[in-house]
Image (spheres, rainbow, N blue to C red):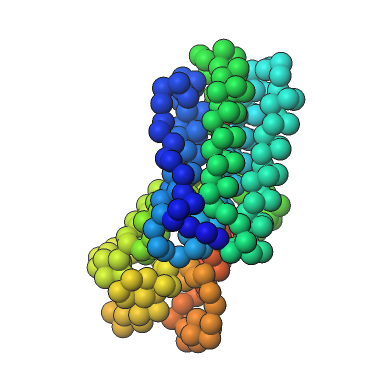
Amino acid sequence: MAKGERAMAYIQWSRRFELGVPFIDSDHKVLVGLLNRMNDAARVDGDLTDIGGILSALVDYTRYHFAREERAQESAGYPDMDDHREQHARLAIEARRLFEAYRRDPGGIEVGDILDFLSDWLMDHILLHDMAIKPYLLANLEAVSAAEGVDYAALMAEGDTRKQPDWTRLAVLAVEDSRPFAHVLQAILNVIGIHDVAVVSDAAEGLRLAEGQRFDLILADWRMQGMDGLDFVHTARARGITAPVVMLTGYVDESLEAAREGFQISEWLQKPVTSAELMACIARHVAA
Ligand SMILES: [Fe+2]
Ligand SMILES: [Fe+2]
């Protein structure tokens, strides 16, 4: 994947994008934020997998946002619901196709093209199609509460029959030195329902936090500037920190397997991870 010169202009949020329906405006801001973080990741020399992680979050959050919008339209009896739903389905398929293409061959897709496609689409869709639903949803408390009933974690775990943990009771520490990806990780953990999330960009800071507070799980990036993920976990164990550690990594080699066999880490997850994979992994290592 080409970077640097491929980045595009940031999307500036403006009032003309606002419907005045709080859940829709806040979702749209999250989506714009994700596109801008993807742009950040494309500008810095970091791990290429960060862009994949942000793309994955965009695919998942878009699915959630569409489900919320459609639930509200249904409740409000919006007459053009079928057309709107079809628009959503087309974008969801295209976004997933981009993500799958990235997964198969991260070097084979142009991040600039993805950003252009997604930002043009999002802006057009908001201004042309979402604006049309505004009169049906403004002051329609029933439709808004129907939309707010969509649960992100339940939607992502659809089809997974295993018992889900009580996400709201978990405390998670993430140690991730890519700021754009750290920002996205925080947003995804929060929308899953985990409110007690600490994200730090530096392993030493992660150790300080984990010594002072109990975490149910620690997510650690493997490749970091300064102390890397494996040094982090070795130091953590030496200091008596016993929380399960899941290593996030772009590459897998035998040192990760050795760390798992030695019970230093519970598991590794290969980036880019989807919300469903992240949730299933957390669920494996925390008490239900
Ligand atoms: Fe929409
Ligand atoms: Fe929308």
